[in-house]
Length: 82
Image (cartoon, rainbow, N blue to C red; front, side, top):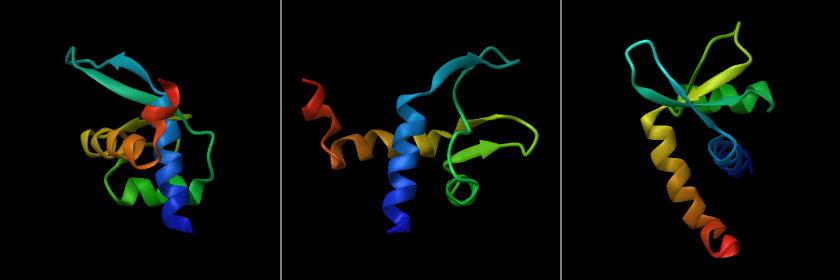
């Protein structure tokens, strides 16, 4: 069950993310930490998120964004919005 919670949390983080320019001029996806810390820690340990204990938001890694896009297909999200 925890695996599905992690997947759906990653998907929600991706869907509610916003783009932010970094110091180097690159764009990154960022989302607010409104989810259980255990789940956020699991996603961070899997290299899907990057966060700091002091910030109120997380950054989605490239791996996290790729997996989130696959999860959209897995959970049929794309079919539901058409």
